[in-house]
Length: 115
Length: 117
Image 1 (cartoon, chains in turn red, purple):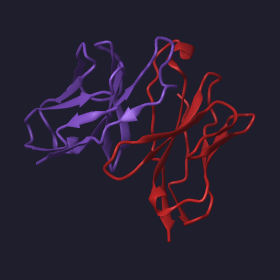
Image 2 (cartoon, chains in turn green, red):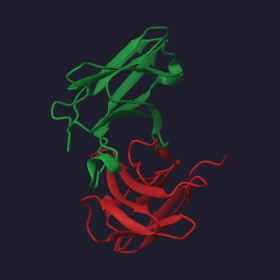
Image 3 (cartoon, chains in turn orange, brown):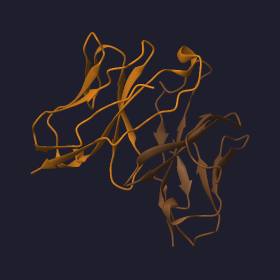
Image 4 (cartoon, chains in turn green, purple):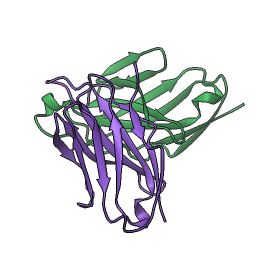
């Protein structure tokens, strides 16, 4: 299973762009990269998923370099409500992996946005 | 459409007792996964059910068990509760087409906060 490494915490200010990088050196060919956001006492919420290059949706962008050994979640112009824990997950679709996949969330990155 | 519903939201139990938690997935979703979240260990995968069968299992003792019904609703049971079982238990559902899996978005419920005293 691909292990992920993220910073434990980050601080930012309202209106700034925040980039959270996740390292996954032993990512497998069939693995996708998925990011989740979690607020206190709530379940995680899907943010974005990608395989390579760049993916963008209405909430965030995900940048994945050619070697795919890391990925960066980019949150444009954060607000106080973006204060949360962000998790990076790496894993393969079940059909592609041909076997079981146990999603591993890790500790995530605690982002605090200041006024 | 309704999200993932977990009941109860809060629960206090005594050591040695057993507990059953319930999860109703989003309508049409066939995969249900359970997680335990604690400050010390973070979010840990318990097990996953698909079409009433356990498809994946995390590294938890046999005291933790689950099942899924024909309508995809799932329950998890913890027997002989220990103080260390105090945690937020989260359920997630995903559509999971026949060729899909984790690449489909997983939707989480708000969780059941279990306190063992």
